[in-house]
Image 1 (cartoon, rainbow, N blue to C red):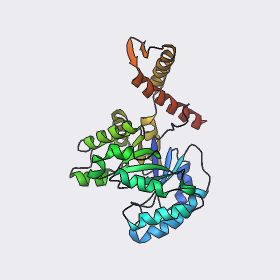
Image 2 (cartoon, rainbow, N blue to C red):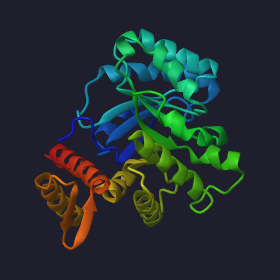
Image 3 (cartoon, rainbow, N blue to C red):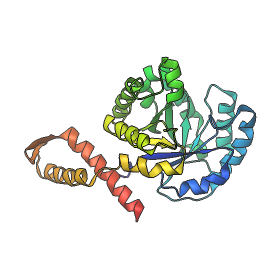
Image 4 (cartoon, rainbow, N blue to C red):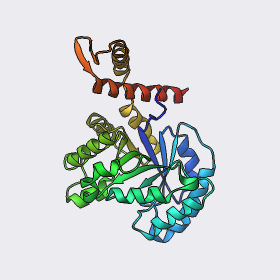
Length: 286
């Protein structure tokens, strides 16, 4: 199993002013739990949310769950306060989600600032502006700490002057697939906000999986099972991938034929990644 690959099929947001939901969220089955002290917290409450949230990361949780903190943007006073608080806290989160990223330079500044106890903190970047979309590939490659990107569809649709629905945002989603694949990082989709439409959630999650996304964010634990199913390799795919990878390992030429289909190295790499994800999912379920 590749130790650098882990499932990032589902991400569950927890509001920064509701710390009592954090431990329950860790048991909800999501691959990532992210406490949000940016969009989920009104400006007058930012300091309170910061004080309530950072101590949460001193608590242990399931090792299979990536624990993340969504900070405020670097260009805001609260973003600077968040970074200072991270440097001063005893137990920083495993990862931070960085909003409204417009350039690679923003990520590089945060990379340089978060040293010492924060040297191991990983990054997830939100692309939610026209400028960020234009610079998506450079942003995705801006730091070795970046493990994932996520689409911020509300701000993005406003910036692009389009509806926040599938067809108008297809270009933005496709461009982020290109950027994430170029950098070899995971890519998550925006949460589906209608909690009373599980079929709509399933359609959107499956559409994103077909497009090249590796996961999707959520706002409620009831959404996790549907999202995980959409982004988990099927049993049929795992069987085929296992057969192809085994054949490739026996063939030094770099070309194999499996079930009358020519399989080349890029396909094998994709299959190896899917098998690693499936193996981790299986191990985490035990």
